[in-house]
Image (cartoon, rainbow, N blue to C red; front, side, top):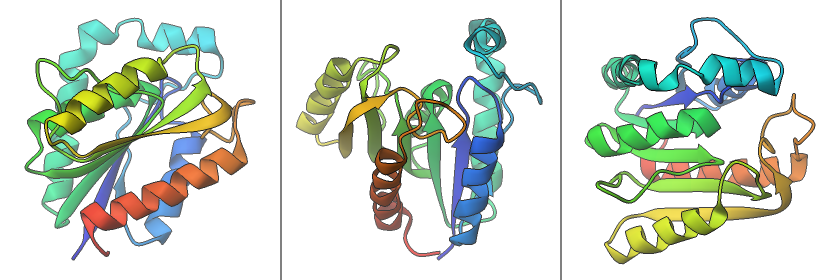
Length: 198
């Protein structure tokens, strides 16, 4: 049974961190697609990243369609599709877990989660959270996890003590190798369970 992954980048754009992760996952046997949501633009600083995402609301429909098309295209090549997303990309992964649950078998989310209303993904979710995150609230994530679990959804939120937002991105000073490796050990187990063997 073949499996494929769509990797949705953070607000930095499709940078080397995402490309390298994609290459590593290809070596593990996955077919990997890395949509470039910013059309080749890559931010190096927070101010540059904010500028890139400034028009997000105006472009949301187009970006959603881009991700939706990626799900459709990859679904023609493999038996099972999963999505891995970081920060900015999490919102689009969450939406696919709702609208494309028939095609997407699992979501792995780094530093972010969506709301439990008006809809929630029926796709299984594994979310990785930093303990000290200035952008995302672990309390909100725990509430969503509790609410979704109570209604029969498959969701797990993992907290990484001592970490900050971007702990999974080697190019960032916040990178935490130990936490990143643990997150990926958990992610691989989750993906094997829900996407099956490659």
